[in-house]
Length: 229
Length: 147
Length: 106
Image 1: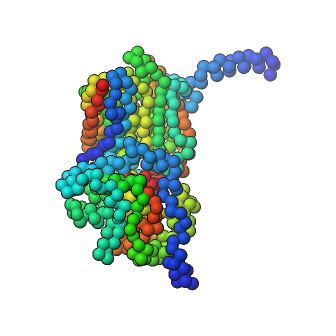
Image 2: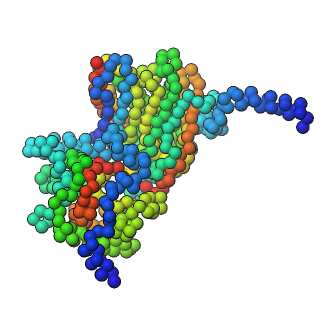
Image 3: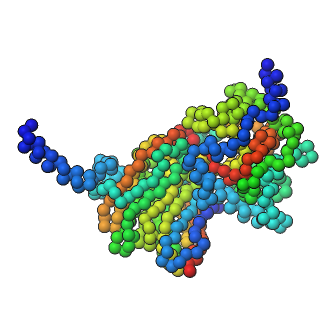
């Protein structure tokens, strides 16, 4: 029965309906904080990223030329999923995942595309692996991403309202972290909640999920650095 | 009670009400308040503390405090104290101003450990203390709700 | 190295009220959070902050864990001569931080 349902879902595409940004599910404090560049702590990382860009990238890249770049990531290059962090790591200095430097640089480059629709040029076929992972039950809780973020989006879990789990604001400043973090950090946090094994930063599982999330959220505008709870 | 006595009773009560109810919402037995005011009266008024009525998340709540004052060399706000009712650390902040400030208004973002009342106490250059107190509902507490 | 973002009006007229906004990168750690291993993360918050304008103190604050992480402050000053706005702060770990910007007055 499960297999039939899963197949049906493959072909029907996601049961999401209209993609809605996490901002729509956030309380007033968060919306207010994100709306003000003077107050949004995420901008501290964007500032730092600007400095790093000037230091490491400006020799070849004009700062203005970064507009639109983040909308083309993640994407498949030579059969491998490449996200923005991976691209910056390979072309630029060898920065560790989730280091302050990589976060700052990623936030800066993504911020240059703020307001632009993301996830251009990813085919449904390429996102197939990630889609399968999205609907796969995992962890001690034996739940899939869809159980919360599709079936229950908009409902409350304790004091929190479940969002659709869209990636369009990452790297994002999360109040729970009291700092800026990447999408992979957020996905790992979700897995932690499911009492599942945590995949490594930059692992195939997280990259495949990231690719599917980009397709699923097609049409949303980039909000980096977003503020989330 | 004889009518005479009753009238006498109300005559005593009314003037006290008219005095502006010193310490109406600031407890005179709160040691934190006494440490700030050294036991002086804290009058309600002149201070406006702005907080939302409800905060879904207590980690970062916008706060503005304004004090009516000409901010001249003769009359200005010396300090504004922000006191929490339920945070583990009740003294949240003190902002020190002066005539050079031009306007007695400070904004920040505060952490709230649950639904509570926040009090702002302003100390003026003439040594008087004024206050405002606001109740705010916080759905997800910041400090002790398991970060 | 501590980071801060200071927002000032591009220019101001002498005698005008100027709104100063600053956001500082600092965890303002409460001492109540636990890390991945379950250990308490030690308290470390900025407790003292001061702002000098052309060398004279225009704003001072005593802060605590009751101020949100990556603290944001907004206050006013009267524009005098063009000059530097120097921020200084100190946290529970006795680490100092500074930030500077220039106020241009017409």
